[in-house]
Structure formats: structure tokens, C-alpha cells
Amino acid sequence: MTDSSRPFRLMLLATVALSLFSACSSNDSVYTGHFEAFGGQVDVTIVGVPVADARQAVETLRQDLAYMERAWDPEGSGALARTNRLLATGAPFSAPPSILPLIDRGRTLALLADGLLNPAFGKVRVLWKFEDDTGEGFRPPDKAAVEDLLRMEPSLQDIDVNGFRLHSSNEAVALDFSEFVEGYAVDQAILRLLELGIDDAMVNVGGNLRAIGSRAGHPWRVPIRRDDGTGVLATLDIQGDESIITVGTFENYGDFEGRRYHDLLDPRTGWPAEGIRAVTVVHRDATTAHAAATALFVAGPSRWPEEAAIMGVDQAMVIDAQGTLHLSPRLEPRLRFMGRKPAIRIIGKMDSR
Image 1: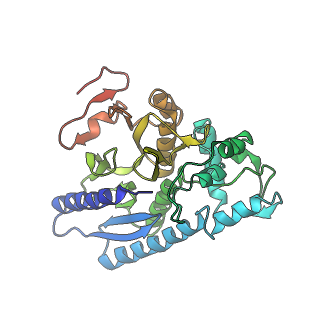
Image 2: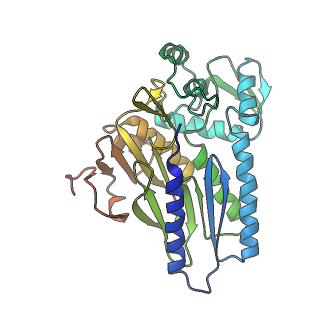
Image 3: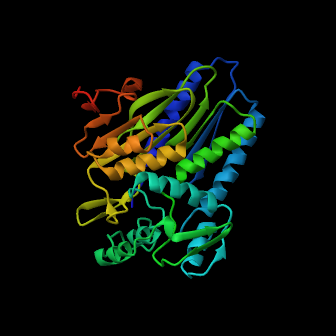
């Protein structure tokens, strides 16, 4: 497996820092802290707060996100892994409190996505072993094993929730919230900052971010990554409260016999979705943006506009397998492309270049 997003994170940090310091006066207080969580770098930028308070806020987020990462790892020793082990027994049990909100949010999003998201098919994801540490190298799973699990139709609807008690009679059910969990973590981090009285900030978890307020009265200028994850395709100014989430084939993947397999799986087939390289969604909350970006990716190049409308997304950018950009009309005028403008198709309009 290869993760090509680190060069982007470094470029993103440089771009954000340049934008911040070029627009802020010497009297503006800007503090940016960095730490690792969810397998990548987290950048937190806070404006208009004394440095000591900003530093403490970043440390609070570091602890919060470290807890979330441990709790929500489906294969570790935290709350979600324990939940999956207990679900497999078929007996009722008391669920860890950190898991119940994710089940509730996951049910809503999965129903809205109509089969394009499925947080209950974690056992299929385990078969893919994108993060195999055995040293044996990546190989796709046995098709029969995937089909056997899909025939059992694991779903969040198979989990009976009675207060804090959970139970499932479907042995194929295992929870994995990777379709939206980083967005959810970003939202929780922003809520924490608001609780601390911080109104102007940006939280970026591995390139997925949400910004509130402004950078000393100026919009936040946010880079959007290229479809290979190695550079900046365009920038977008945001002000007030918005999230930007990008998913693509460049993050988790494995190569086998000359073919690349990525981890954006189609829940209907158990195999990587085809036809799209990357999806970027702009939305008020990061959880919805992350889930929608995943669902649009799985929907494919012909169906994604329909799915965007269903999920309440009116600002999206899709890069198809041929490298053409498909844009929602509301997003197109907000983008500032870096370098030569690529081929663009605006949904509902004629192609432009």
C-alpha cells in the first residue's frame, strides 16, 4: 500500500500559511499547530486568540482526536473493535457510548445514500487488507468470500438498538465508519473549539477540513488537491462555516499484477468503484460532506448529480477516469485554478475549457 497524500499535506500547509500571513497584519494573532491522527497530519489554525490559549486548544484537540482514532478503529483494541467482537456473538450487550452516535448518524446517511454507503459491511473491508502489516504484499480477496458476505446483506438495520443495548442476529455485520468518520472527527473538533470560545479557526485532518469565521476578516483560502493527490488543482475561498472533503483513488490502495485497487468500495459489489478518480464536496458540515463525497464516488460518472441532489449537496467537483472535471454550477465560479485550466463540464451547461 502507498499513501501519496503526504506531499499534498506539506504543500497544503505552505499554501495556507502563505495565505494567512500575507493577509494578516502584524497585530493579528495566528497560531497553527500540527500533530498526527487518523493516519496523517492534522493542522489546526486559530486566529485572534492569545498564543498560550491557542496552544492549549490545539493540545486539547490532539487528545480528543487521539481518543477518537483509538475508539473508532475497527481492528484495534478500542471501543469499535470491542463492539464488533460482541456483535459477532449474537448476544445483547452494552455498547460503548462513543459508538452509538456513529451508528445513529450512519443509519441516516446510509438510508439517504440508498445502498451507496454501508457502515455495516466491515467484514468485507477486512478481506481487502489494504493495511496488511504481514509483509506478504497486497492481493485482492477471494471473490467467493466477498460474495458469501454480501449474500447475507449486512446492514445497520440488522442492529437492534435498545437504549445502550445492541444486538444483531446477522453474523455478517461488522461496523466500519471509514466512509464518513474523518469528517465526523473534524466536526467534533470544531464543536470543541466553539466550546472553548474560539470562533475563527480551521481544522484539517489529512486534507479534509472545516473552517469557521474568517482569518482576521479575510476568507480562508483553501487548496483542493489534484486527482493524483500530489499537488494543488485549485483554491477556494470560504468564510463563515464550510467544509471541504476530497476522496479519491490516491489515498489507500494496493497494486497487484499490474492493476491498482483502491479502498473506495462499492457496497453493492464489495469491489472498488469504477469510473471516477476523485470527488470534492463543499458542505456546511464535514460529516455530510465526507459521506456525500464517498457516495458520489460510488455512484459513478453518470449518476453522481442525482445522488448529490438526494444528499442535499449543491457544490461538488468530480474528476472522471478520463480526467475531465464535472462541476456543480454553484461551485464553478468559486474555484481559482492553478496553472492551465483543465477540461470542464458544468452540469446542465455545455462543456467549457
